[in-house]
Image (cartoon, rainbow, N blue to C red; front, side, top):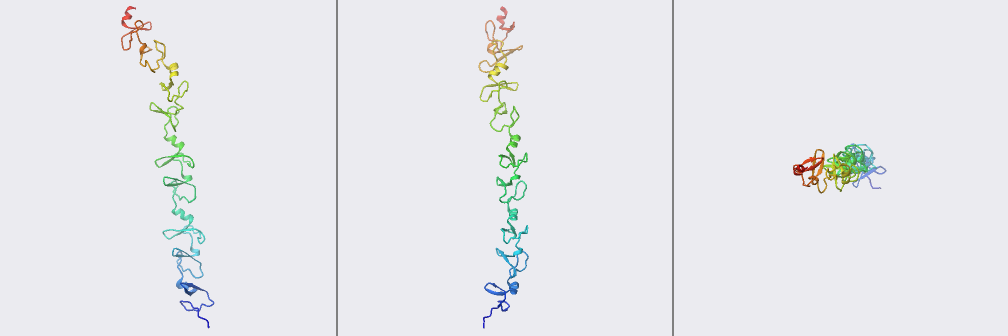
Length: 281
Protein backbone atom coordinates (compact mmCIF):
# COMPACT_ATOMS: atom_id res chain seq x y z
CA UNK A 1 0.00 0.00 0.00
CA UNK A 2 1.45 3.34 -1.07
CA UNK A 3 1.49 6.48 1.12
CA UNK A 4 -1.19 9.02 0.43
CA UNK A 5 -0.13 12.21 -1.38
CA UNK A 6 -2.96 14.67 -0.78
CA UNK A 7 -3.64 18.40 -1.26
CA UNK A 8 -2.95 20.23 1.97
CA UNK A 9 -6.33 21.98 1.81
CA UNK A 10 -8.94 19.77 0.09
CA UNK A 11 -7.22 16.44 0.79
CA UNK A 12 -7.64 15.29 -2.82
CA UNK A 13 -5.15 12.70 -3.87
CA UNK A 14 -2.42 14.36 -5.99
CA UNK A 15 -0.97 11.21 -7.53
CA UNK A 16 -0.77 11.72 -11.28
CA UNK A 17 -2.09 15.31 -10.97
CA UNK A 18 -0.52 18.73 -11.32
CA UNK A 19 0.18 20.45 -8.04
CA UNK A 20 2.11 23.42 -6.57
CA UNK A 21 4.47 23.40 -3.64
CA UNK A 22 3.74 26.44 -1.49
CA UNK A 23 5.57 27.04 1.82
CA UNK A 24 6.57 23.38 1.93
CA UNK A 25 2.92 22.38 1.42
CA UNK A 26 1.60 20.48 -1.58
CA UNK A 27 -1.47 22.19 -3.00
CA UNK A 28 -3.67 21.26 -5.95
CA UNK A 29 -3.97 23.91 -8.66
CA UNK A 30 -7.60 24.63 -7.79
CA UNK A 31 -6.83 25.35 -4.13
CA UNK A 32 -3.71 27.26 -5.11
CA UNK A 33 -5.68 29.59 -7.37
CA UNK A 34 -8.34 30.06 -4.71
CA UNK A 35 -6.28 30.27 -1.53
CA UNK A 36 -2.58 30.82 -2.26
CA UNK A 37 -2.14 32.75 -5.49
CA UNK A 38 -0.63 36.25 -5.33
CA UNK A 39 -2.72 39.14 -6.65
CA UNK A 40 -1.42 40.92 -9.75
CA UNK A 41 -0.46 44.51 -8.94
CA UNK A 42 -1.76 45.63 -12.33
CA UNK A 43 -5.04 43.78 -13.04
CA UNK A 44 -5.81 42.82 -9.39
CA UNK A 45 -6.65 39.24 -10.37
CA UNK A 46 -4.98 36.12 -8.92
CA UNK A 47 -1.87 34.87 -10.62
CA UNK A 48 -2.87 31.23 -11.12
CA UNK A 49 -0.71 28.15 -11.13
CA UNK A 50 -0.76 28.08 -14.93
CA UNK A 51 0.40 31.70 -15.24
CA UNK A 52 3.98 32.94 -15.27
CA UNK A 53 4.56 35.22 -12.30
CA UNK A 54 6.98 38.17 -12.06
CA UNK A 55 7.80 39.92 -8.80
CA UNK A 56 9.72 43.01 -7.65
CA UNK A 57 9.98 44.34 -4.10
CA UNK A 58 7.09 42.29 -2.67
CA UNK A 59 4.79 43.05 -5.59
CA UNK A 60 3.61 40.55 -8.19
CA UNK A 61 2.43 40.66 -11.80
CA UNK A 62 1.20 38.40 -14.55
CA UNK A 63 3.91 38.33 -17.21
CA UNK A 64 1.55 40.05 -19.67
CA UNK A 65 0.64 42.71 -17.08
CA UNK A 66 4.25 43.69 -16.41
CA UNK A 67 4.33 46.64 -18.82
CA UNK A 68 5.53 50.25 -18.87
CA UNK A 69 2.89 52.52 -17.35
CA UNK A 70 3.54 55.11 -20.08
CA UNK A 71 4.14 53.33 -23.38
CA UNK A 72 2.87 49.86 -22.40
CA UNK A 73 6.00 48.10 -23.66
CA UNK A 74 6.33 44.57 -22.15
CA UNK A 75 9.12 44.61 -19.59
CA UNK A 76 9.56 40.96 -18.69
CA UNK A 77 12.95 40.88 -20.46
CA UNK A 78 13.72 44.62 -20.52
CA UNK A 79 15.37 47.07 -18.08
CA UNK A 80 12.84 49.00 -16.01
CA UNK A 81 12.55 51.36 -13.07
CA UNK A 82 10.02 51.49 -10.23
CA UNK A 83 8.81 54.95 -9.25
CA UNK A 84 7.80 56.11 -5.79
CA UNK A 85 4.15 56.13 -6.84
CA UNK A 86 4.36 52.40 -7.67
CA UNK A 87 4.42 52.76 -11.45
CA UNK A 88 6.77 50.60 -13.49
CA UNK A 89 8.43 52.31 -16.45
CA UNK A 90 10.82 51.35 -19.20
CA UNK A 91 14.23 53.04 -19.21
CA UNK A 92 13.27 55.63 -21.81
CA UNK A 93 10.01 56.72 -20.18
CA UNK A 94 11.61 56.71 -16.75
CA UNK A 95 14.35 59.03 -18.00
CA UNK A 96 11.72 61.37 -19.46
CA UNK A 97 9.94 61.53 -16.13
CA UNK A 98 12.95 61.81 -13.86
CA UNK A 99 15.65 63.30 -16.08
CA UNK A 100 16.92 66.87 -16.21
CA UNK A 101 14.87 69.26 -18.28
CA UNK A 102 16.38 71.43 -20.98
CA UNK A 103 16.45 75.14 -20.10
CA UNK A 104 15.60 75.95 -23.72
CA UNK A 105 12.64 73.72 -24.65
CA UNK A 106 11.85 72.34 -21.14
CA UNK A 107 11.79 68.80 -22.50
CA UNK A 108 13.75 66.02 -20.80
CA UNK A 109 17.42 65.66 -21.73
CA UNK A 110 17.77 61.94 -22.35
CA UNK A 111 20.83 60.14 -20.96
CA UNK A 112 23.53 59.81 -23.58
CA UNK A 113 22.17 62.60 -25.78
CA UNK A 114 24.29 65.58 -26.86
CA UNK A 115 23.86 68.28 -24.24
CA UNK A 116 25.50 71.32 -22.66
CA UNK A 117 25.89 71.87 -18.92
CA UNK A 118 26.52 75.39 -17.58
CA UNK A 119 26.13 76.64 -14.02
CA UNK A 120 24.31 73.48 -12.88
CA UNK A 121 21.79 73.76 -15.71
CA UNK A 122 21.47 71.62 -18.82
CA UNK A 123 20.40 72.22 -22.43
CA UNK A 124 20.01 70.07 -25.50
CA UNK A 125 22.98 70.96 -27.70
CA UNK A 126 20.66 72.47 -30.32
CA UNK A 127 18.79 74.47 -27.65
CA UNK A 128 21.92 76.16 -26.24
CA UNK A 129 21.69 79.16 -28.58
CA UNK A 130 22.90 82.74 -28.73
CA UNK A 131 20.34 85.18 -27.31
CA UNK A 132 20.96 87.58 -30.19
CA UNK A 133 21.38 85.54 -33.41
CA UNK A 134 19.56 82.40 -32.13
CA UNK A 135 22.22 80.10 -33.60
CA UNK A 136 23.45 77.06 -31.56
CA UNK A 137 26.69 77.78 -29.73
CA UNK A 138 27.99 74.20 -30.05
CA UNK A 139 31.82 74.30 -29.81
CA UNK A 140 32.15 78.10 -30.05
CA UNK A 141 33.21 80.29 -27.16
CA UNK A 142 30.40 82.22 -25.50
CA UNK A 143 29.82 84.91 -22.88
CA UNK A 144 26.97 85.42 -20.44
CA UNK A 145 25.13 88.61 -19.54
CA UNK A 146 22.84 87.85 -16.62
CA UNK A 147 20.84 84.80 -17.68
CA UNK A 148 21.41 85.42 -21.40
CA UNK A 149 24.05 83.59 -23.45
CA UNK A 150 25.81 85.26 -26.39
CA UNK A 151 28.22 83.93 -28.99
CA UNK A 152 31.45 85.93 -29.06
CA UNK A 153 30.66 87.88 -32.29
CA UNK A 154 27.21 88.95 -31.05
CA UNK A 155 28.56 89.85 -27.61
CA UNK A 156 31.24 92.05 -29.15
CA UNK A 157 28.76 93.67 -31.50
CA UNK A 158 26.26 94.41 -28.76
CA UNK A 159 28.44 95.20 -25.72
CA UNK A 160 32.06 95.87 -26.76
CA UNK A 161 33.30 99.45 -27.03
CA UNK A 162 33.31 100.82 -30.58
CA UNK A 163 36.45 102.29 -32.08
CA UNK A 164 36.16 106.07 -32.50
CA UNK A 165 37.76 105.79 -35.94
CA UNK A 166 36.28 102.71 -37.67
CA UNK A 167 33.20 102.24 -35.42
CA UNK A 168 33.90 98.50 -35.14
CA UNK A 169 33.99 96.63 -31.76
CA UNK A 170 37.24 96.57 -29.82
CA UNK A 171 37.62 92.96 -28.71
CA UNK A 172 41.02 93.23 -27.05
CA UNK A 173 43.57 95.87 -26.16
CA UNK A 174 42.87 99.27 -27.63
CA UNK A 175 43.79 102.85 -26.77
CA UNK A 176 41.83 105.60 -25.01
CA UNK A 177 42.31 109.21 -26.12
CA UNK A 178 40.11 112.13 -25.04
CA UNK A 179 37.62 109.67 -23.53
CA UNK A 180 37.27 107.84 -26.85
CA UNK A 181 38.37 104.20 -27.45
CA UNK A 182 40.47 103.31 -30.50
CA UNK A 183 41.90 100.16 -32.04
CA UNK A 184 45.70 100.37 -31.83
CA UNK A 185 45.85 99.89 -35.59
CA UNK A 186 43.37 102.77 -36.12
CA UNK A 187 45.25 105.25 -33.95
CA UNK A 188 47.67 106.41 -36.66
CA UNK A 189 48.95 109.67 -38.09
CA UNK A 190 46.44 111.18 -40.49
CA UNK A 191 49.17 111.96 -43.02
CA UNK A 192 51.82 109.21 -42.95
CA UNK A 193 49.69 106.48 -41.24
CA UNK A 194 52.43 105.73 -38.73
CA UNK A 195 51.10 104.09 -35.52
CA UNK A 196 50.99 106.63 -32.70
CA UNK A 197 50.63 104.35 -29.67
CA UNK A 198 53.46 105.09 -27.26
CA UNK A 199 54.79 108.04 -29.30
CA UNK A 200 54.39 111.84 -29.18
CA UNK A 201 51.52 113.16 -31.25
CA UNK A 202 49.07 116.04 -31.41
CA UNK A 203 45.52 116.58 -32.61
CA UNK A 204 44.08 119.11 -35.03
CA UNK A 205 40.45 119.34 -36.15
CA UNK A 206 39.55 115.81 -34.97
CA UNK A 207 42.63 114.27 -36.60
CA UNK A 208 45.81 113.07 -34.93
CA UNK A 209 49.30 113.60 -36.34
CA UNK A 210 52.82 112.49 -35.52
CA UNK A 211 55.15 115.34 -34.58
CA UNK A 212 56.95 115.44 -37.91
CA UNK A 213 53.78 115.53 -40.05
CA UNK A 214 52.20 118.12 -37.78
CA UNK A 215 55.25 120.40 -38.16
CA UNK A 216 55.37 119.95 -41.92
CA UNK A 217 51.71 119.91 -42.95
CA UNK A 218 49.54 121.42 -40.22
CA UNK A 219 51.33 123.76 -37.85
CA UNK A 220 51.23 127.51 -38.41
CA UNK A 221 54.58 129.15 -39.18
CA UNK A 222 55.94 131.75 -36.78
CA UNK A 223 55.94 135.21 -38.44
CA UNK A 224 59.18 135.91 -36.68
CA UNK A 225 61.46 132.86 -37.09
CA UNK A 226 59.42 131.14 -39.86
CA UNK A 227 59.57 127.80 -38.00
CA UNK A 228 56.45 125.72 -37.17
CA UNK A 229 54.54 126.59 -34.01
CA UNK A 230 54.02 123.05 -32.69
CA UNK A 231 53.22 123.52 -29.03
CA UNK A 232 55.98 121.05 -28.17
CA UNK A 233 58.81 121.86 -25.82
CA UNK A 234 60.17 125.40 -25.55
CA UNK A 235 57.86 128.17 -26.65
CA UNK A 236 54.48 126.54 -26.26
CA UNK A 237 52.74 129.93 -25.80
CA UNK A 238 51.56 131.64 -28.98
CA UNK A 239 50.76 135.26 -29.84
CA UNK A 240 48.18 135.87 -32.60
CA UNK A 241 47.55 139.25 -34.23
CA UNK A 242 45.71 140.14 -37.46
CA UNK A 243 46.18 136.71 -39.04
CA UNK A 244 49.80 136.31 -38.01
CA UNK A 245 51.21 134.06 -35.30
CA UNK A 246 54.43 134.12 -33.32
CA UNK A 247 56.16 132.01 -30.77
CA UNK A 248 55.91 134.01 -27.57
CA UNK A 249 59.69 134.21 -27.41
CA UNK A 250 59.79 135.52 -31.03
CA UNK A 251 57.25 138.27 -30.35
CA UNK A 252 59.82 141.00 -29.63
CA UNK A 253 60.79 144.46 -30.86
CA UNK A 254 62.53 144.33 -34.23
CA UNK A 255 65.02 147.02 -33.17
CA UNK A 256 65.79 146.49 -29.44
CA UNK A 257 64.61 142.84 -29.10
CA UNK A 258 62.44 143.68 -26.08
CA UNK A 259 59.83 140.94 -25.49
CA UNK A 260 56.42 142.41 -26.24
CA UNK A 261 54.21 139.56 -25.04
CA UNK A 262 51.39 141.08 -22.98
CA UNK A 263 52.78 144.58 -23.71
CA UNK A 264 51.90 147.46 -26.02
CA UNK A 265 53.48 147.30 -29.47
CA UNK A 266 53.37 148.96 -32.91
CA UNK A 267 53.19 147.24 -36.33
CA UNK A 268 55.19 148.91 -39.11
CA UNK A 269 55.79 147.25 -42.48
CA UNK A 270 54.72 143.87 -40.99
CA UNK A 271 57.35 144.22 -38.26
CA UNK A 272 56.68 144.80 -34.58
CA UNK A 273 58.30 147.49 -32.45
CA UNK A 274 58.06 148.67 -28.90
CA UNK A 275 56.49 152.13 -28.58
CA UNK A 276 59.88 153.78 -27.89
CA UNK A 277 61.59 152.33 -30.94
CA UNK A 278 58.54 153.04 -33.08
CA UNK A 279 58.90 156.79 -32.28
CA UNK A 280 62.45 156.78 -33.64
CA UNK A 281 61.47 155.31 -36.98
